[in-house]
Length: 590
Image (cartoon, rainbow, N blue to C red):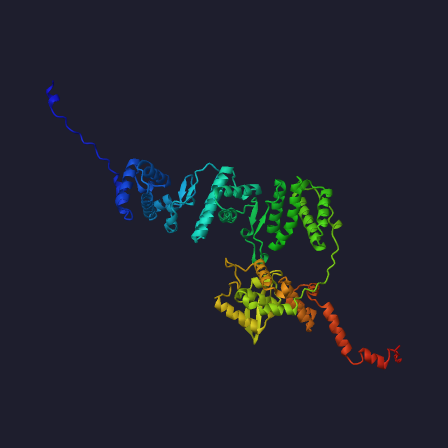
């Protein structure tokens, strides 16, 4: 045997794996994690050959979670995952101190998984510190679906993160959006703005299957409309092809908008035929962009045209090929509904305007029907709409049961006869005292002008207290909705109707109508000697004929004139019998 073979073998020591110095230094700088948590992270980074904390992301977090649960069989892995998150968040804060780091950490849409706790705005990210492991914190933008859909979801996600600070509401919106994203990706929906009614119904059914109660579904469902609205409002350009338009995006001048109105969107979804829907969208685009009409007028008129296009679509007909006979059939069906003449004429006029537009655009050669053949004569009946004095007295007696803002709003109707839209849009600078008199400045949303009328001293004092108590500035709305805008007319009417019903006003028979108080005030002025012209100026009407319709004067006026006539000497019946007739003959009783 060779001599060297008898010599003892020299033991060669295996090199101990060492974590790269860069990541070791970065980890040592993070004081939020220590002990076992940091030790496990070091071993994991070494095993995965992680070179820098900047390489940490959500997929690596999932690998770490798998290592803890499946390899090391650690049941309480959350503490170590929290350590991972704390190190990542520390790394983000460090990177955000440099320009290159800010670019790398930028929260942007990419084909990868985004995890909200790793948001570049760490103040916002820490608001989710207690809900890191919820599904709605993880947004997988690597899913195989359209870029348009991903962009819409990402845009809406950012708005939700910014807008909703209440954690409960934020959870509802984020979870709803999360479900919407996965539903659309699975159903092949490429554009949420172009979702059809049946697809929206399918989404609701999807929520039914994936939630455990109806109440939970109703918490999540509003995220669809929120997403539609957000995408429409946030777009660089107006999305005229969207199935729902949100009118706030149109940026119309103030004189074309009623801030207290309820028109916030226009839907084309009900028009199922693609061609008819396109005609409707082009017509509305023209109406909004060119005509200069008020938004409420445009939307109201569009309602009749929309009904017609829905009728055509249900029968598989295209508006460009519609015949006179088909239009006649439609109008005949409208007449059978016993629509009043004024409304029916508005339907006919709307169709006429629509087809004139179609002809100008070249979709039809000429008007396919004769509107003048269908117009009905309008007979304007005079209706007594004044609120009985007893009802007003009963309302005033129970006014203290209403919230302060509703009390004040009602007083403006009862005292001044303002339109409810005018009451809802009053501002803090509306009242003034001049030369011992008190006045109110009112913007007439219907007439698009201001008017200034005197008011009672008592109402002036009440409103001064209200303004001071609620700290209302000169440019602030007196009566505000939950978002700080003008109080909605529809909301006021609904609340007052409910109040009158609950209080049993007029034996439970009284149906509150805000406009009736305008008739009441106009009639009161006229009955007490104000001229028709004075009442017209007070109401702000352009035409005397309109004022005449507001004054419930005929029966009362005739009775009053009769009383005054027969009270005059020589005009009563007894005097006539004593003195004789017109020709001086003695009256003879039979």
